Image (cartoon, rainbow, N blue to C red; front, side):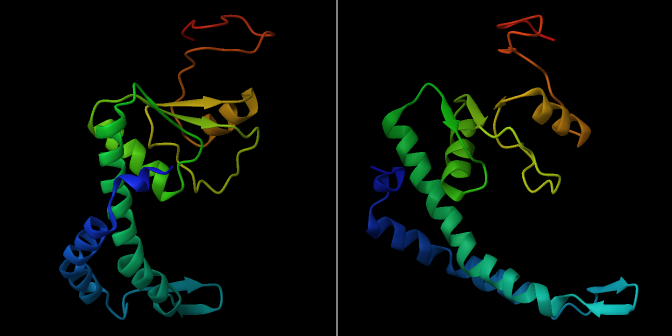
Length: 168
């Protein structure tokens, strides 16, 4: 079962229709981007022709999709009443919607970052949950280097001191 099962199709259609005025208004605000020139080593390049299709798709589809996921998450949390919400990714609509709805209801949230690697691209800001469970000092060090504020609540590494719950 999925938490989307908590949003009947008729309700999803009603919500999507209700978003039409917002979508029209936002699409109307998208301009040709005359101010969106970018200086490069070989002169100025117009950025808007590259960005326009992505901006239009984000408004047309992602806005509605995000709204539907958020509504389903609210209904699922109201039905299931969990003590906490733990997610394994904060990049997909489903997980982000669950966490945002949980935080609005005062339900604790945590991201389990199960990778021992962290890219330098900063596409993931790790800012959606109350806490993050990390594997390894390398990931923690990379996050700190990239500007994240890290507080260690429990260190499960047996080779370090302050194991199991000691604030560092």
